[in-house]
Image (cartoon, rainbow, N blue to C red; front, top):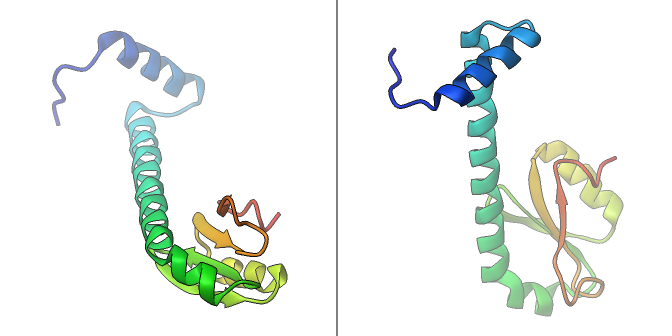
Length: 120
């Protein structure tokens, strides 16, 4: 494979860092691609969750006043009575991004936990 128009200074720095970490250039490039793809996918998931939340916000405010609502994987997951139930569901889903919203507690802003920060 040939890649053209690569910034030479960045490439030298990238190669040097790979060597410092004991990686071949191809291993370092493979890791960099994985990181980039995961970041893009995470951002896509976040955007999908936000779209669903915005679409359902009025319904959530009226139907689930004292519940914790979970939106993850680009869909409404459910409404739960306690944060412990939310924790169980999120552990099973194993998602990197979810919106957890309780209208009675989060009137002015949505509750959002990223990548297990709720679970720690």
